[in-house]
Every structure is written in C-alpha cells, then in structure tokens.
Image 1: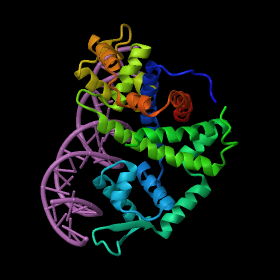
Image 2 (image 1 turned 90 degrees about the vertical axis):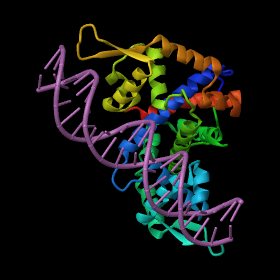
Image 3 (image 1 turned 45 degrees about the vertical axis):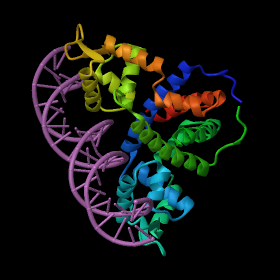
Image 4 (image 1 turned 180 degrees about the vertical axis):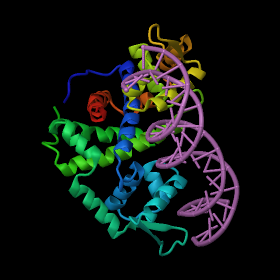
Length: 150
Length: 150
DNA sequence: TATTGTTATACTCTATAACTATA
DNA sequence: TATAGTTATAGAGTATAACAATA
C-alpha cells in the first residue's frame, strides 16, 4: 500500500479533479494528433474492442455501454460499417434490432494493430513508464471506471 | 507498493491503453452533460486554474502548457475575456505580447466554486472513492502527465 | 527574419429534435 | 404506447492556413 498520503483533504481532491480535467484534454489532443491514416477515433476503437470482447451488440447497447446517445453511436457505427470493419445483421426475432458484429476485416485489423504495436498510447505507456508504474496505472483504471458509472 | 501485478505484459499494456481511451471519452461526455449554466469547459477551467496557480501568462505560454495550438487557445482565452474572468494587459517592454491574468471576478469565481463544492468531478471523486482510493488516483496523475509530455 | 497574436475556415465528435418502422 | 434506429441540424472544441504587428 502507498503511504504517501494519509487521507486527501477536500482541497487535495479538488486539485486532483482540476489536474485530471486538464490531463484529459491533453491526452485527447495528443491522441488525435498522433492518429495516422488508417487509424480510428477513440469511440470507434472502443466499439471495435467491445465487439471483440463481448460479442455482437446493438447500437443502443453500445451507446449505453460507452455512455453516449444512440444517435451519436449510430454515426460511429455507420462509419465503421462503411469502412467494412463491422457488419449489421437483422435480429432473428425482433425486426427493430440490428445486431452488429466484427467482420473478418475487423478482426484482422485488431490483430494487425496488436502485432505491429502501432497503438501510440500503448507504445507511450510502455516507453515512458516503468513496469511498476504501468501496473499502477492499470490499477487506477477501475477507479476511473467507477467515476463514470451512473 | 502494490504487488498485485508482477510486471504487465505488452498485452496488458494494450488492454490498459484501450480501457484508458474508452474511459477518456466517457469522462469527457459525463463532464459535459454535468456542466450547468455558468460552468466553463475543461479547457477554460484549466486556463483559469493555471493563471491562479502560476500567475499571468501569454496565449502562447498557455497553449504550450495545455498542449494545444495558440490559435485554439486564442479562442478559449477570448471567451474568458468576454466573460470577464480574465483580462489582457500589454507587456511592458514587448509590444507583441499580451499578459493575461485573472480579474477579481475570476478569482471570485474560483473561490465560489470551491466553497460550494460545485465541481462535479471533485464531488464524484469524493463520493465514489474511499480516501485511500482518492490518494491512489491522485498518485496516478503524474503518470498521466508523463504520457502527454513531449 | 522570427515571434506573437488574430482571422477565416473546416473538420470531428456529440447532442437534441423529429421521424419511421416494428413490437 | 414503447422501443430501435435513422435523418437533420446545431454546437463545442480544435486544427490548418494566411495575415498583421512587433522585435
């Protein structure tokens, strides 16, 4: 256990909040500027990854999982469909729903990405943080996750 | 020291990267939807806070510190000037530069914000994380900072 | 010639509102 | 009537390019 901070005061929490907000923006800008041709946005990548991890899903399900509106997710999904990475098939019993899943091209994209270590964020984490710090960052993810949960 | 993870493999690093990217987007969307009237954007808040912490600065200095272009920072700063929270005064010796600093209204805004604990992010950190977890999150900030550094 | 800052313009992401189709 | 999804439109945030003023 870390012992550096006995218990953050509310001023320290505010400082963390302010810093996190600033870092959020900086990370986002850095991610965008590092994105090359053939790369996809954060939302697009998140969708691809989620479909890989959890299998087929509808637009509404994806929107809910990523904390955005279905209209916005609709645009994200439409782009990925045009790009040929995901495909929508009608739900067998409910005609309103469209089940989205990865195409072979989508699966191949993920694998190629992983093999090539093309991901700027992953490369940077590995290059700039020690293994212990990488673990520390990884351990902080569940905390961030809880912050965005309803 | 945490001992849960002996040394993250490159697959784990990729997983962290993917998760961080998704959480980044979710946090940003949540921050936006929680923003009420009279609130300012992440970039705007970051500028206000930085001026408070480090004193007067130019547009170029602020842009560099936040990792964005001076044209973009110009827009952010222009809005804050219109809102009356910051003011620009000509540099005494270098006529090209404009030194930006907080107005009394800007200082008052920060103080009111703090006193009222109006900040959604700070409130959420305090409400959803234990003191130890708050410290853990705070400790992760320097790691994120190093990721965005050039 | 280099630097500070501004203006014009465009792109991405996301939101709200209104609509269609199916249940 | 409620739900899944689409289309139209708007706004915020940021980028690039071109320019003006000062050093």
